[in-house]
Length: 236
Image (cartoon, rainbow, N blue to C red; front, side, top):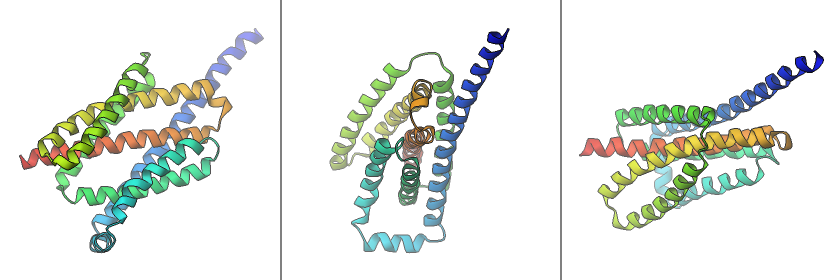
């Protein structure tokens, strides 16, 4: 009788722990998106003139904006479970920088394009995270293929920087949507599996920050890809 009463309690506690972890991870990810959106709004509306003047006066800042988030993301990946507080701070800095970058990119698009891209990326993101969290199917093979395709796409993007073909960019945007759609589901499933298997051996807060970073990067890449699709469709 005593053994029977204990088993359900262990299952409930495990489920509660997983739910708390997922809530924390998606909370950090949502906060990152909100910070980026707020910074983008400030840059595009009240401080638009000052931001443009600053960028024009410091052209080297473009490289800092492009490279610093990559360095910070690598720092989070290596230190998240050892230093959750520092990793959280780096995540917020990444969100601020990307918010500023989004504002510069978004100035080339209409408000309708931005709204459509945000709604589309949100719908895809929510659908795929739910699928990744609850599906019983192992997505690791699909995720590995998508990651390999992402590397190939990045190389092709670099080549197209010299070709400057709008048609190629348009096609690449559709490919990027497919890739990050798969990666979103895979990352959601992967972070759940890491928590279930190793959550007791590492900082849960740090693990949640690491997962939030991966999902945040998936979301912003979906957003940028949809923005390019809607923007270039209008011009055509």
